[in-house]
Length: 178
DNA sequence: TAAGTGATCTCT
DNA sequence: GAGATCACTTAA
Image (cartoon, rainbow, N blue to C red; front, top):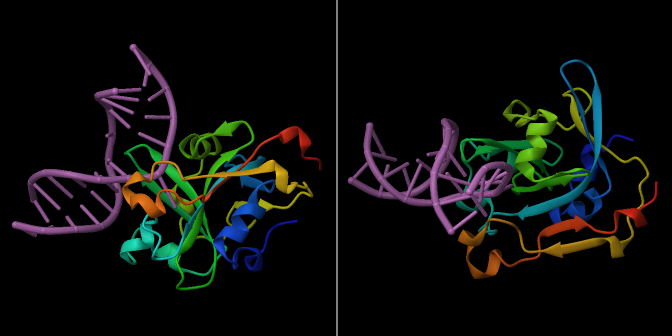
């Protein structure tokens, strides 16, 4: 089942947990469809989140974060890597989830490279139409399989926001059944 | 541990 | 326009 806009248009921390165990699906140029289970995400929640690109207001780059949930926010960093986020929450409340890992691919930069995801998806809906979407394939994730930690690479955000447990990841993959 | 890489943002 | 920074990765 393809996740629809109403799934995303809820609080970031709620959607973040529920995204674990869902499948990121991409239709490649050759028509082939690749689906991989999401295993690691990070939340960026609101304008007051000092680690978020949106903390200093709306710019050309982060505009997608201010839209209603259900679209992609893809940006380019370090001269090399595309970062894939899905926008969540309501319109004009900037929030997004960075997809950091899927099964077999650990790291947001590697993930986009492996799956061929680039900024061309920025601002587009997560749907079959655009060729990049997320599905619920019935995987049940027990709460005990989810761990949290501070987000990676956000020391600049100061002592409060850099330490929030906004990173969610799966452990004990073998305990998860379809 | 540090370099690589270029878009983006914040000053001049 | 210039300079600093950066939600990363890899090789050492």
